Image (tube, rainbow, N blue to C red; front, side):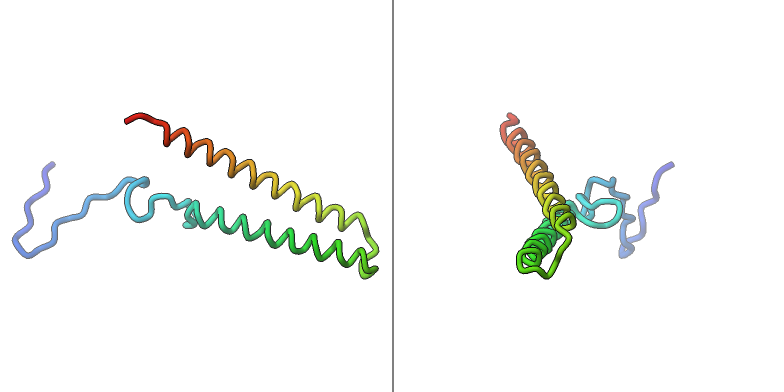
Length: 103
């Protein structure tokens, strides 16, 4: 089946773009871009670090008596930070591998 040529003055039909092309390229199905996901993750880790620091300070001055909660908050933050660093390292490795490709 062929498309008819529209009369002059009428807009041409636009072809459908594949999912990896166009202004929405790089967007996750939920609508967030990869950059947004990374920045949100960094913000969450920063918030966790701030809360863990506050919990440690409260424990030191006696406002908090449950050391297990404080230790759990600190360990959660440490694991999240280590995960972020591993993701960073993998992204750098991938970038360096792409950079070394010969065209």
